[in-house]
Image: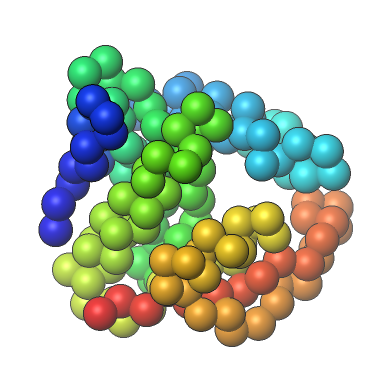
Length: 158
């Protein structure tokens, strides 16, 4: 599995996140345009803390030249679930999301997992379907934290 992606003319690599990444990951989550409008309360106070990074399988895509964070994901192994995945607004449509999903599938495969559950942000469902996820149901709203139903999918690990 390749952990790099050529972005004209730069290289992106995926590495394990460290506690030192916590602020940058939190900033990426809170500033995501995908969570504007009615979705804003979901991430307003969200924090990806050093403790979360140290106890979860968190991987970050970085620009290899300047170590700028382009995106990240968190994979929970038991039960298998993509807990978080964000791509920086400035890195949208550059293949970072696909790189992260491919990396996540590789990690899941190494752990002996056959499928990874995703409870998707509604506008991201099309992306997950485009990378091979299959719709399995709907996660119902759970106010006050989440005020809307969300697509439930599985990414097969082959």
